[in-house]
Length: 82
Image (cartoon, rainbow, N blue to C red; front, side, top):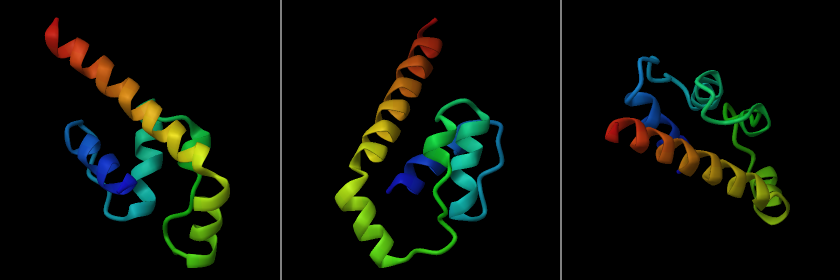
């Protein structure tokens, strides 16, 4: 779902839409939409054991991602209303 959100945002920018999941987050970082510590995850290969550990012990990363996306949308909405 995070990749879907990222590609949706990128589709509304001048950035090329990523051709792989791994490209989505560095592209958001390049646009200053998310911070580097959110963009470093490797989405080229998905290991279910690692995915489980992330879900159990790193939920704060997902919360940070959502906060940054919400913040971006608030700014984007303000720009559209000006």
